[in-house]
Length: 185
Image 1: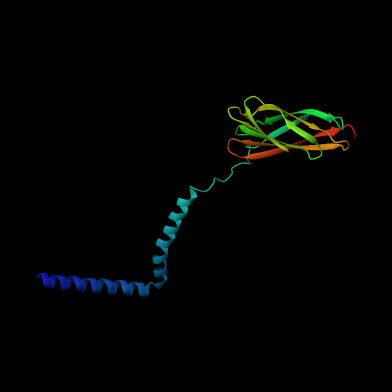
Image 2: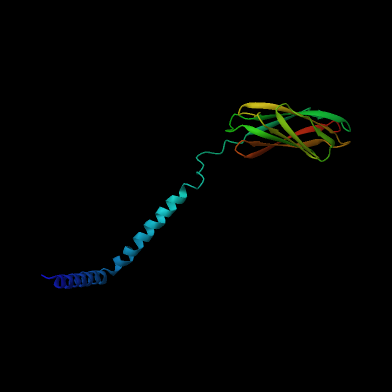
């Protein structure tokens, strides 16, 4: 067989194969859709599994990262007087990260709010807010630290709420409230 005859034979062979494929597709039209759909589905699944690694993990249990408590002292304060307070901030044992920022918010009924500095913590004092940021100091799970501040109590009132906020090293925030009572109750 010559080269020219061989090429004609290949062309005929290709035509026969195409005719067979065409006949098979006509007889199996219901499968033709799947033949085109399967590669698309596989591509989509591969794309989706590639994205899964960027999604946050699903929680397997309730978050335990952010448990703090604040204990404000004194519990009872004289009215219309300058009072020095202490707040004991605890990073409870259920937490998973150390705390490195503590915020003390003033109660709007008080005046002359001020914060005391604490060794190892940077203090940023704003008019109604003290921010203690631990540079090399942290409150680890199961540990507590005492922070001090002062404020002039109002002339009247009873149960006064104070807000305390903490941030852990994973940049999660949590807050707690505690109360002091005026002697006018």
